Amino acid sequence: MGQIAMTSDSLPFDDAPGESGNTSPYGRFSTGILPSHVLRRLIRARREILAAEEITDAQIQPASIDLRLGSVAYRVRASFLPGKDKRVADRLEDIAIHEIDLRAGAVLETGCVYVVPLLERLELSHRVSGVANPKSSTGRLDVFTRLIADHAQSFDRVEEGYQGPLYAEISPRTFPILVRKGSRLNQLRLRHGSPGFSDTQLKRLHDEVGLVDGPADIEGGLALTVDLQGEALTRQVGWRARRHAGVVDIDKVGALDPLDFWDPIHARKGAEIILDPDEFYILASREAVSIPPDFAAEMVPFNPLVGEFRVHYAGFFDPGFGHESGFGRGARAVLEVRSHEVPFVLEHGQTIGRLVFERLTDTPPQVYGASLGSNYQRQGLKLSKHFRLP
Image: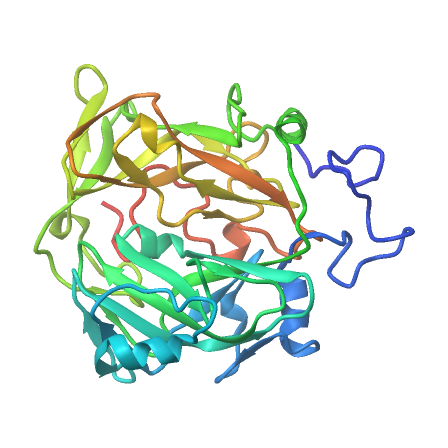
């Protein structure tokens, strides 16, 4: 089905375009996530996104900007937050063990924590804030990556009006990774204002465009469940990461044989698997997801009381994800799953996460899909872009 008609009468939101019918400087709507053409405006005209080196078009996604590693990494004793009275640089003076030069490339080892100053910095205006997430390919490698800002009291959050540098905390969990100055591990979304989005509005949106291929379970977001039956031909339902595999070069696409790093998991009688503690799995959602061009979504953790596992390090779903396939078809969500301290039985159809939706301030000129060179548009059960198709 086509794009939703964006009029004040039919729009499933509380506010109409602009003020008094005028277009907002951030797009057609005065509040929401900022799309790519507005991000470019913040870079070139408003100077709210700055960088030590020129920001490239390849960094700009439909509703986010990829952040680049700087020239040095600091191996630190432990993860930390600076707190409201300190800068990250102040804490690094106390907690850093040694510096690593990234200009020629360096390996970040598993089980270690690194903090890397990013090339980008922010000079945000009033009511503009940010939220960060690992890129999809980063999450699928089990690389734990979080954004830190000066005076931050939480990870992956940039307070409105923030002015200062940005840092990435990086901790490879399964595979050591080769990175260099300019490598992109995480991404930043910016929003203007704090628009709300209720379950009632989400149900109306699903009725308009078909967010999943079937009935929608909507309560605190759109529920996604796990597929443990697999496709009829292969019966493969997932991948389990192999310990003590080789190094993954974060910047090389399609260079690795998946069987050198992963063991396939096939459907079994009963359609369930046991998640072993401290092991990493790639699974897929049972539902095919379709994100309309005027919206973005984020996977949020499901209630931890119903399962001893963590799902989805990389939670951003771009506008247009799965949408070009047409109404009710979409693309499956790939799930990065890690069990906690005890083994846990995961069953087919079990709820593993929820998608929270938010409107963009405007429709981006290009959305996620083949025309943009997106890696995961028609994905099923797919590893990160670093691996050749099996």
